[in-house]
Length: 222
Image 1 (cartoon, one colour):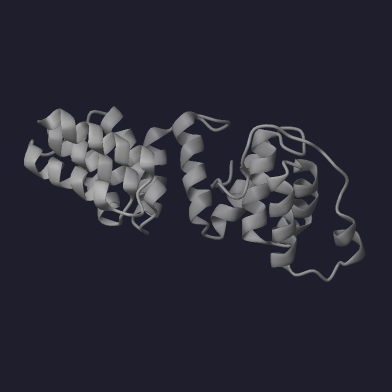
Image 2 (cartoon, one colour; image 1 turned 180 degrees about the horizontal axis):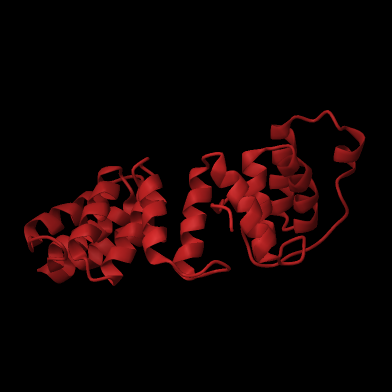
């Protein structure tokens, strides 16, 4: 029976891969701390040198480092620095999940939601996302909002958007304005949606693309 898994979204980014030999510093200085090794891996990831990232992550994961376990799972899952292997990805994700990694639980939920390696199981995905959403994880909240909206459960979708917006998530704030504007999962309230759009426009920590979207929606209201 498959272990309960969780996917770690970790330090991996970008699409292309370049491989290079393992860092000589790691070979000659085995007394580096876990954090120092993780920092080295981050530097290699920034250069998209996934083979070196893998060579750092594998021993760290075997030593029980939760973050490394999740990252190793991502390397196997995406085939970066090592041949793609969904089974091994699932294994390492599950190791991180069993230690309580929120990111791992979210990624496990994504696997069940998309049916990637495991059988598609949306109720299980919702259950896992709700576990981390209740711990105030914004990614999980937004995924729940999206899932419930697709399931035509607009009330629950609104509830999770509202909770994420209350925690100052920029995307959730914009969505909340749209939900009020269109009456999605709540009573239509264009006055309140306009207030939300204006709040977005005067906020200093909101990405420009969200501000632009809010500005356009505000113009369309009048």
